[in-house]
Length: 111
Length: 115
Image 1 (cartoon, chains in turn red, cyan):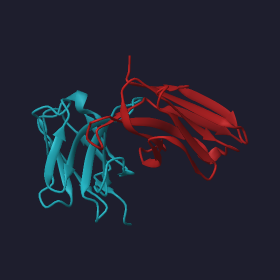
Image 2 (image 1 turned 90 degrees about the vertical axis):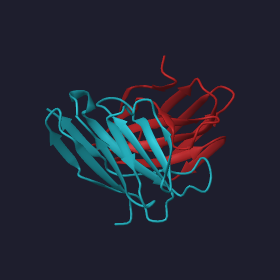
Image 3 (image 1 turned 45 degrees about the vertical axis):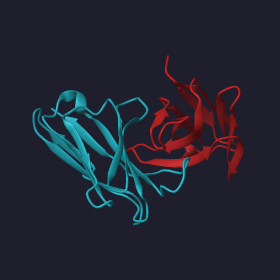
Image 4 (image 1 turned 180 degrees about the vertical axis):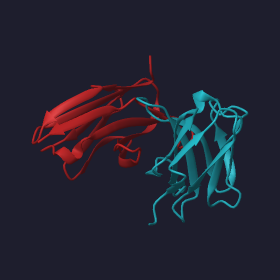
């Protein structure tokens, strides 16, 4: 069993829909990252959080440390949101940057 | 462009050859990281530097792999005697290096194909 599990693996949505991507992890963590990867490989960091909730534009990330679970929400989805979304955790006591990555959720938003 | 840059973007090589990739981090960033990503998988940590010091190496980094950051600025990742299993996207990232849990800035990666 992977230490970081994401669901769903693939997600197709219609423009305007509310989207939720889930991330569960099995290790103690000091921080969790949500990343966005577009075709061609470039990765953009969306959020880094260790507790609670963060919001940036149409994106919201939440984390529940006790349940070892995080969610990424996209409100009013748009075709330009189509990408792979990756959850990654920094293990507690581990070095920063030694991230454990999920396999990613491939999101496709149709116009 | 003041982001993280990687060179080359693509590299095709024959099995057994040596290859070297370069990463230029954001100029004021002290920490630099290398990751590897195969098709359909999430990235995997390889190694990281704090300034010129290599502080951690993954067990994935076999003896054929070596990374350097000689002046604490750019870094190189060399793979000797490449194997087909080395085919992957090699990603570099950097961060300020002032605290734990910092935002990472990624380069576009170097796609390696070993024939």
